[in-house]
Structures are given as structure tokens and as C-alpha cells.
Amino acid sequence: MDYEKLISLANEVKQNAYAPYSNFHVGAALITNSGKIYTGTNVENASYGATICAERTAIVKAVSEGEKKIKAIAISSDSEDYIYPCGICRQVILEFAADDLVIICSNNKGEYKVFNINEILPHAFVFKKNY
Ligand code: THU
Image (cartoon, rainbow, N blue to C red; front, side, top):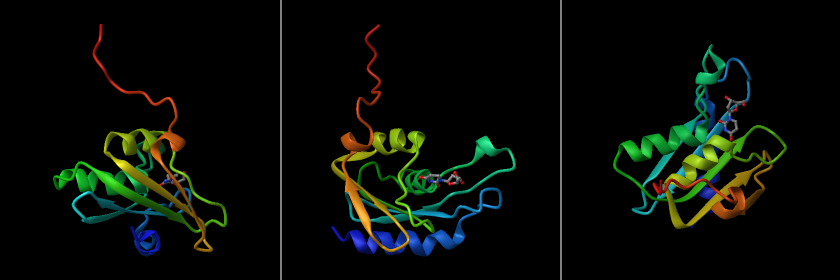
């Protein structure tokens, strides 16, 4: 798994971020179990709550092309701080996580930290109809 390639793709796509409200540009790049790569940016909206994060953009692109398992997802922003996925994105990542999924959180120096889904989303909600 080439973490640095995914980070560099996330950085590249970040230029397409639509973030006129926060001016916080985010890019994400993921690789699926079948080896395909999808990228995404945040897409903001005048109605702030309608904003879509970069991670979910990339995931929705992949899933709508028939991909259901993500092996790795990298996230980048222009910040010197590491960027971590928001709570909603953590739950969406879980939905399509391959068993060995890794989440690669980077900063603007190209440094990164790697997590698995249990570290990023402990005690996750899973839907099991038992009522
Ligand atoms: N954002 C992402 O795209 N991904 C994250 O992991 C955190 C936040 C976006 C949403 C919004 O457009 C902007 O960053 C500020 O919250």
C-alpha cells in the first residue's frame, strides 16, 4: 500500500475543493479492494448543514461505481495540524471498510499518521435488527 501516493492524490484534488464559506480546503483519496482509486473534495453550501466532506465525496463516488470495500483512505488539508475525519465521515467510512482498512491522516508537511477503523471509531454503532 503506497500511503504517500494516496496523500499526494488527496493533495492534488484539494485544489477542486468548493469551500467559499470556511476557506478550508480538504482532499481525500481512497483505494478500493479491487485496486481502483477515487478522490474527492469538500463541497460546501450556503445552507451550511448541506456541506459534504471530502471523505464522503470520494466514498460516494466509489460506491456509486459499484465499489463496496475501501482498503485505505488518505485525507489532506492546508493545515499544519493533522486532519482527522469528522464523526459523520467516520461512520460512513465504517460502512464500507475492508477488514484491513487504514485511515491516513496528513498535515501540510506531508507527515502522516495511520489508524485502523477501531481506533478512529471505537464503540461504533452497527445496525442489527433485534427488536
Ligand atoms: N471537512 C472535510 O471535508 N473533511 C474533514 O475531515 C473535516 C472537515 C470540511 C467540511 C467543511 O467544508 C470544512 O472542512 C470546514 O469544516
